[in-house]
Image 1 (cartoon, rainbow, N blue to C red):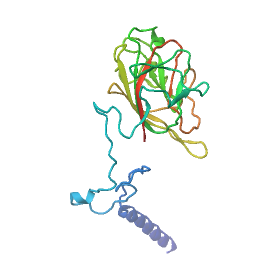
Image 2 (cartoon, rainbow, N blue to C red; image 1 turned 60 degrees about the vertical axis):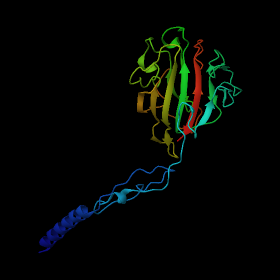
Image 3 (cartoon, rainbow, N blue to C red; image 1 turned 90 degrees about the horizontal axis):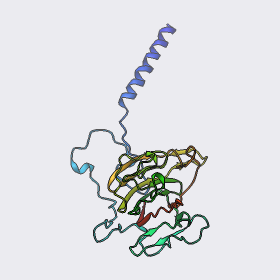
Image 4 (cartoon, helix red, strand yellow; image 1 turned 45 degrees about the vertical axis):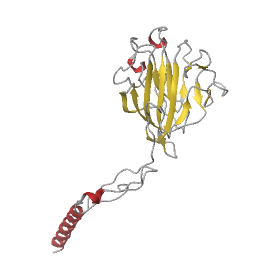
Length: 276
């Protein structure tokens, strides 16, 4: 009799567990995004599906109005201008922290001053949207990595390559549009030497917990001259010239532009950023 009772109890528990599992409501939850309030954030949905359009409509908060880029206005109204051709006040020398010594040109661009060293923003950034335009000399100087070489370093650590790559073979993870020594571009969308090139970048910084464990890798999306060349690419770590990527914990960092020390003649203009 004791054996039968135990069997009965076991069977009842199994049936009960199955019934509970089948009756549990389905949970739908979107990942929360700090600073954004949504009717769908952290809410649970169960029961019958909504039956009218109004059941899934909401009206607050209303997104802020931003004047977009246009022929009359080449900077969004909520962007921070890092270089507009008038001065280098937002920048400093990486070597000594003094005023940046690159050359400001009459056309509103700046050119790398060979030997002056890298420059970086005084302000530090994390997640950003970045717009930057650059140009190589019309008459090419050098070959391979010595033709129009510079770089744009996110947080001072992750390099998006600048290079004259219209007709200049080199290693593909070092050409224009590459994340240096990690990922080549999806396509070569470079304009001819002497023409302006345009990068539009969405960058999300890496994250670590309080114990120094990485919880999220850096990601970057890049359009070169309006063409997608990096599609939410995950960075392994820093972009090293020699050796494997380094993956040390860090906070916000500057935007850095490279002096490659080979008389590259690279120029930049119209640099602005939107914090995300």
